[in-house]
Image 1 (cartoon, helix red, strand yellow):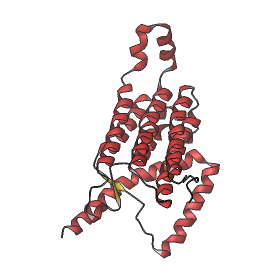
Image 2 (cartoon, rainbow, N blue to C red; image 1 turned 180 degrees about the horizontal axis):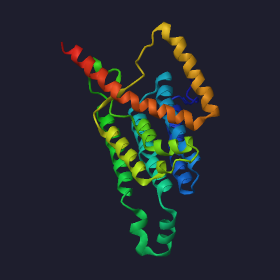
Image 3 (cartoon, rainbow, N blue to C red; image 1 turned 30 degrees about the vertical axis):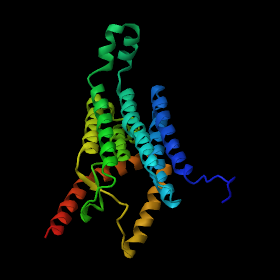
Length: 262
């Protein structure tokens, strides 16, 4: 490489991270205008890009502390702020909102007690990301290889969005999916899972035996094909599967931890 040539490799993963941040901020805009499906899809797009930026950095060998910090800031907006704002806008009573605009005295009623759940989820996400950065260089026992500490931020965002995904999957026919209590529960649950130290499965280092690889590939392709036809039903099914993996992950973590200490 000559002096006049510019190495763009260090820029690529940060550009992907910035794109993820743009989707997260744009999701907030979509939620403000009531474009619910686009708001959800933008957060999912941010999650995909969040997965890719680390891959790009490792492929080009340009991982850096700056990139890690930038990634965390992007994650906080896309997975800590945007999902809660979307769910709050989606469940807020429009009559209260209009009345609050007319009479400032009605503002506390429009904000409502459920706003604290949005704040709680955001603060838990910030805690999770700060802890992750602080433990980047910590050495963990071998049995931690297949596990995250708590739920990763993108998965936490998906748990926050689970009520609206179920609502879309049902065609809007199940009204209580949109109830503030149901939404509030998932905001609290996702926040607790992100901030907790509960071990959750990490698929990065799981190796599938050859005899199962073809079957899993077929299932993956079938899921992708169905996702183009029934996207919300597939997202809902994946959410149920992910919820089921949480107790499974805890079981195997405790089992492998016990075997390691023998």
